[in-house]
Each structure stands twice: as structure tokens, then as C-alpha cells.
Length: 263
Image (cartoon, rainbow, N blue to C red; front, side, top):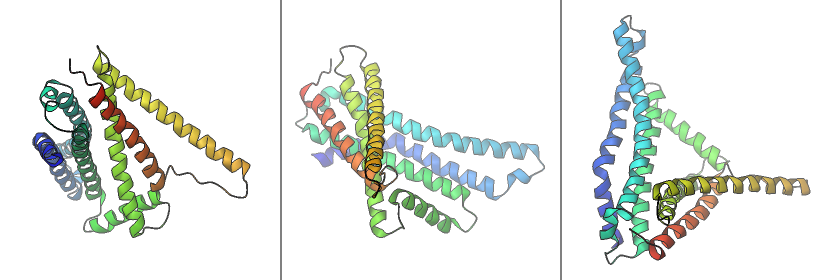
């Protein structure tokens, strides 16, 4: 049943999100041609203006696709789970865990695809002609070294990828938890969802601040050994993402299974 739910969710989202992500590819091609041909060196003001408009449209398309994807996925979760479509969904003999997993997995997949396309797009645009593979390899190594805190290795590469995946899951589940908790309000469900989102944001920032204070206390008490921070490493990202994912998942499941109210 989980496979069928994921298949249905994928079919329901690709008709809009696939063209949006294809827009990134098209605009990347146009922007790369504009940069490589050096249209800005032309003496024709219309050519320069056209080149500027292409690059501005390219930048705008990146924001539109990223923000549009997030907004659509939130809207899709809300309407298909707690909106009019929710009446049909919750009458199916399907476990609530399967519903959550299917929607979160598909949403995380689309976000990951958009992230990779934007990353590859920027690499294509700024890579020197014929040096794309070299530049993108160096870019990946810089990212891995930043998150891994050490030289690039197969283990660090795999763990960084896993940490990134869980980070995306945590972000998606945070939204599902906020939308679900917002349904507990008899009125102003959308407003309450936003309120829960900002409440979680501040709580997370408080936990982060307490973490820094705790590490500083340990370092001050034990001068012979310095405790390192995990915030810029795959370890810290993985641990915090797993913890947040579990918390937000349980909140989503609790509301959907115990407090479901579609009125």
C-alpha cells in the first residue's frame, strides 16, 4: 500500500513540478550562452539589454522554482490531507504512517531534485569553458570538506549525503507538523499553522543557543581538552536532523491519528 500511495503522490505532483524544474534547465542553457558568447561586449545596446534581461530572468526563475516548489508542496499536503480531498484519503484502509511517509518522501525527493538542479545550474554558469567537470569536482570537495571537517573520503561523502537527506526530511516534517497542529484550532487553521512554524523556529534557536553555552561551559571547565562544535559538520547535521525528524513525525502522526478533524 505504501508503494501505491507514493506512486499516486508522484503522479499528482509531477505534472506541475516537472515543468518547473525543466524551466531551470532551459534558463541555464540561455544564461550559459549569454555568458559564453560575451554578449555584454557588444556595441549594440539592444543586445546588451537582452543579455541583462536573460540573466535577470535566469535569477528570477531560480527563486520562482525553489519558492514555488515549497509553496506547492505545502498546499498539496494541506488540501490532500486536511482539505476536501482528505475526506476520501482518510476513508481508505491505509495506515496513517503510510500516508505520512508517502507524502514526506515524495516532497523530499522533489526538493532534493530542485536543489541539485540549482547547484548544477550555478556550476554550469560559472564554470570556465571546457572545465565544468573540474570546477564541479572542486565545488563538491569544498562542500564535503566544510561539512565533513576533514579531507574528502568515501565515508565522509556518504555520510554527508545521508545527513543532507535527513536535513531535508526534517524540514519537510516540520511543515507537516505545523500544518497538522494548525488543524487543532476550530478557526484560523492556516494562521495557527504559521504560528506553530515560528514557535518551532524560536524553540530550535533557543536549543542551539543552549548548545553553544553548554559547549563553552565544558571548554571553560576543562582547559586540557577543547570540545568541538558539531554545527558545521555532518555529525551535527545528522544528529539534529534525526531528532527533529522524530519529533515532527510523531506530532504529525498524533494529530492525524488521534485528533483528526476535517470540519
